[in-house]
Structures are given as C-alpha cells and as structure tokens.
Length: 172
Ligand SMILES: [Zn+2]
Image (cartoon, rainbow, N blue to C red):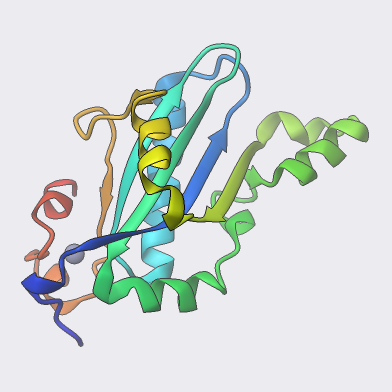
C-alpha cells in the first residue's frame, strides 16, 4: 500500500459540482446529501477530497462544491472517476438536468424523489472566479456545519487512523 508523503499535500481542484434540491428543501437535508455524495466519491475514487462548498436556500435551493484532491492522487482520481456513475449513489437520487427535464415532460411522479447533480471538470483558467462564486456569492458551508473533507481510508496510514490530512482526519 502506497503511503502519501507530507510534501505531496498540495491540493488540486478537479471538479465543479452543483447540487440542486427541490425548492425550499431544508438546509440540513441538503448538507446531509452533499456530504454523503462527497464521501461516496472519495470512497469510489480512493482519493482524499476537500470540498469548497457554498449554498443558497429558499426558492432556489442548491449548493456548489469545488472538489480538490492531493496532487499525488489526481491521476488515480481521474482514472477511477471515468468509471464513476453518480446515478448509483443513494439509489438513483441524483440525476442530470436533462434526465429531470424528461421526467417533468412525462409528468413522472418519481421526479419528486430526485435531485439534480451536475459535475464538470474544474476549469483551472477560472480558479479565482470559481472560488469567489462558490464561497462569496453563496453562503459558505463551514466545516462545523457539515463535513468539507473526506478520507477514503484507502492508504494504510488512514486505515490505522493516522490520516496525513489533519483536517480530513478530524472530520471522521
Ligand atoms: Zn486519509
């Protein structure tokens, strides 16, 4: 099992995520689902994930997240992510905007149990704007409110409870 080294702790943004819930969904419920999703993404890709999160509630309840992974885990992230199917997380709860449009057109009742998830590769030419948009234009999610760091417990150190990412270790 490969050990991650302290000098490899630089985090690299990999995904821009948008979670859109039904209007007026509770903040607590949204946080719980986003947290669950990020942990599943971490487990599946076997990478540490730090998420910069920002939200809005009310008529347009949604959350944005920027997923960052340690530089030395980026390659694994992308090779595993290619096989990741977000429809399988939480029994098909997360669907694309196009899938939601189809369900609405067909007046399909199942749409009421689903939420929209959009995942896009992070555009590194717009890093400053993206962080400003998520963390300043929206209400930032504090790590005391909902987890923002996720450990896959894949590395042997992590399995022994000695995760190199101090803030991630605290989030168990
Ligand atoms: Zn860890």
